[in-house]
Image (cartoon, rainbow, N blue to C red; front, top):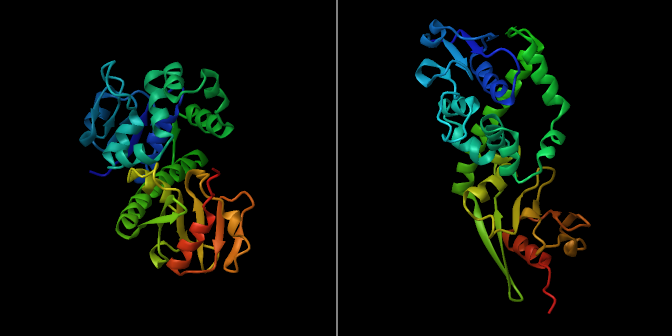
Length: 291
């Protein structure tokens, strides 16, 4: 059945309901009403009821979490909408903002700050005027229609979340099939690098997804560098992974095939495309141990 309407609660708006409605607005392009739902709303699968109504019934398009037990996992209406779209696991793994959003909405600011390992006052300091304006404007409306500016922004937010997660999943699958792990030995030192060969499939943004892929592979503590095609040139980019201090690419800045090496040593752009030479440049960038 085609969705005709989105209903969410009136009063204050929070990231949870705002983002959940943004995803649904992007998917369905239908009006959002901010009011208490009726029994008919909950029974009608053409109406998405979000963060209100006391029911989680994905087939009926009901996405509330407030009826869950006190000790239930801290998931919110946004989580439930993402689950219904098949995007929740990837969002939880690769969107660092999702878990804190769940904690804030279900556990409150004090517990959320504790779990984030930050002072409680830091939560307020991290609030952006962008967040406050969007939530306040959304909260003031009883109905948000597709021709309103706030609705159009919500659709952009929903679209960007969906596009990021779907394109990231495609890139992770690509890297799983095509990425290579290099081991570089020099003077008793061993470093590992992830190498991605130049390809039309990744030409638009060659470095996209590298960090997420390394983390998903469980190799965050093993990799020191990434080597991927340089989007602004014909060669490759050598980059320290997680700013590993075992590499300093300023050591190779005088090499003929090095177009640029940052003075702080975290990145170098090289013209060579030969894997043997790329490995040699990595080797020359290793910081020698001081005995």
